[in-house]
Image 1 (cartoon, helix red, strand yellow):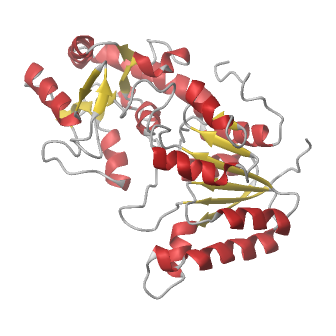
Image 2 (image 1 turned 180 degrees about the vertical axis):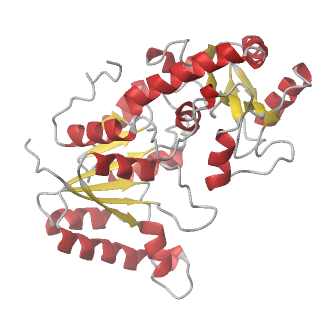
Length: 350
């Protein structure tokens, strides 16, 4: 399928202006950055902000109809080649169908980086899946295949990294303020961790008991405040090791975007091998563990050997960027959408 160059793209996602919602490090910004660097004309349509600004109460729910109409009006004028929908929950399925009527040649994709083990998230994905040309999800393997077999094709979307967002080079410093970083949204939310069902607060307590002198930064745990936006990104540049422990460890290639934040800043990352990321990165780039005892051994070893930590951090930083730079991911997304790339046979590692 031939595509015009460059593309006119409307990217509908949460480019929030709200203080807590100002996720400057989010996938929405990174994909737009990558698409622009690839030479495309990208218009960011922040569906939630438009809805809130469309009514005197500043409430999203009262501006949904207006936001949908404004998207259609803009596309009628802009005549996009591509519309990307990233967690665009304000945009209703009938609006997606109307987009095709207004711009018959448009290609439409949706992307989603939330877990597929959340039923409500799957419901939101499937609500538009039959209306879009492709669905991109930050999960691979059988779980992704099941989604793709439902109502339309689906492909893996890695969490991208971006030089303008992940700016740290922690592998260049031996004297970082913190030894270990593990931020969580809810310290009591159950995690599946090396065969254990446990809470982040309990994991951190066991780490602290094992290493009482460890300088840990654990936002959201044990009374430490949560970090958002710029304070969170600044904190990433102060840590030597990062624990990447998501809610589930048995869903192939699923991770929160914390993985990109850590590796993108040159942090040496500790990750459960069960998630499958060692199919893409080596143990010299991404440090794996298969038991909590092994995790403890690795924390102790790397925290006391800055030269080794710096070497692995640099190798992980280089490897992740070589595969998942925002421009590479954006060009992959466009290639799949226009049937120039077969995602089933695509190999990230060159």
